Amino acid sequence: MAEQNLWINGQWVAGEGERFKSIDPARNEVVWQGTAATDMQVDEAVMAARHASLSWADRSFAERLAFCQKFAELLEQNKQEFAALIAAETGKPMWETLGEVGAMIAKVGISERAYQERTGTVENPMPGAKAFIRHKPHGVVAVYGPYNFPGHLPNGHIVPSLLAGNTVVFKPSELTPAVAEYTVKLWEQAGLPHGVLNLVQGLVETGKSLSSHPQIDGLFFTGSSNTGHLLHKQFAGRPDKILALEMGGNNPLIVRGVSDIDAAVHNIIQSAFVTSGQRCTCARRLFIENSSAGDALLRRLIEVTEAIEVGDYAAEPQPFMGAMISAKAASEMIKAQDDLIHLGAKPLVKMHQKDRDLGYVTPGILDVSAVEKLPDVEHFGPLLKVYRYDDLDAAINEANNTSFGLSAGLLSDSEETYRYFFSRIRAGIVNWNKPITGASSAAPFGGIGASGNHRASAYYAADYCAYPVASVEAEHNTLPEQLSPGLKF
Ligand SMILES: NC(=O)C1=CN([C@@H]2O[C@H](COP(=O)(O)OP(=O)(O)OC[C@H]3O[C@@H](n4cnc5c(N)ncnc54)[C@H](O)[C@@H]3O)[C@@H](O)[C@H]2O)C=CC1
Ligand SMILES: O=C(O)CCC(=O)N[C@@H](CCC(=O)O)C(=O)O
Image (cartoon, rainbow, N blue to C red):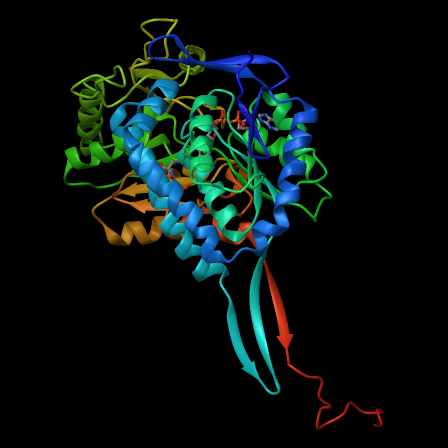
């Protein structure tokens, strides 16, 4: 019997589309196999969400929250097993995937606070009436997830969507279907009513089928800039549908006058190489002064980078970096490195893929100062490009010389320099003497330019999950004391 891998209207059913599988990139073993949802099954999922929509929105916030809290409890109870599955499907070490499940649990409490604070009800007295600001759900929303945080990032759209009273059709990354299935099974155990959350697995065709479905009221997307731009085009001329886009970055980190070199190098490594460079917030471009202090920092960065442990997700002691998402992604990073070297980049630490069947790469650093036309693309892996600079303004200008604008940082002992940097740099996350990865769920999360469409996620996800309704309400009709000119009663 075919695997029942779609969840539609509270039933597990077999996909009737193309067969596909996910592979453990650290061990080259099959983790999951199944079949994609066809157009007709996507339609069934959307219509199930549509039918469930009114009764879900009619429940009280407390009732909807109780389902989410039950889900969080189940995550806690299954934390180890779930983290092991995320590790197997993504190659990320267990220390990271345990953190990912922790972030999913924390999301419920944070989203509850965000809902109340940003989209709760406000009542204002006025003569003979009351003025209210309330929020209503959009209806049916599609949620698209990336592979790098296959649990946490879709969860960051799903939980606030459900709390606000929307029903959801979830299309996970085709590279991480097992994590999506596990997540949805926990929602099922939490007793979510039929149709409130639906899962459609599949490749790009399934994604297209869902995004073009006339019955969705919104689409919340975390993924690549390319796909996000395609969706934006597709939604052009559709002001009736809400589109929230969280995309990639080509993020800069500038170093200027630091006394503690090891602490600065630690912040650089956490920014550039955590999750094998597969975070949208990762530093891709590092600006180091042309000075003896800059030389010393670069030497130490090279030394520590060369000693980074890369290994199996379950190894003890744990490695800093695991495998990338796939052997293909790893080979593409090596190709990107070769292309940059061809353009004139100088390898300071050369990235290697030891086994072409596995996703492991060692971290790489290139000096690109001499490259004249560096492509403004996101290299989604552990490859850091170094620019040497003489003048801070020139470094900031080059840092801003990108179509993206997700995260940026300054490492410097001078607060004055930070204020100067902060006022000039263009990004949605701007940090000082801290890694530029590891953004908090309790803050807005999103970028400008090609990184997003100003619908920040995380704490501000509440904003795009509901629309405000302004009401003036009085219990009876009363004639005003002062009538408008020209009226006689
Ligand atoms: N700003 C942010 O919050 C974050 C952004 N990202 C970005 O995500 C990317 C990595 O994730 P990927 O899974 O590779 O992203 P992706 O764009 O390839 O896929 C994301 C989702 O969109 C679907 N999709 C792909 N093409 C489609 C189309 N034409 N129409 C409709 N759906 C389509 C995919 O099947 C998947 O479900 C990186 O670029 C990274 O920077 C990752 C994490 C956070
Ligand atoms: O969405 C949230 O709750 C916070 C944002 C977040 O978790 N950011 C992480 C991951 C971003 C990525 O997937 O690349 C980070 O900033 O490291």
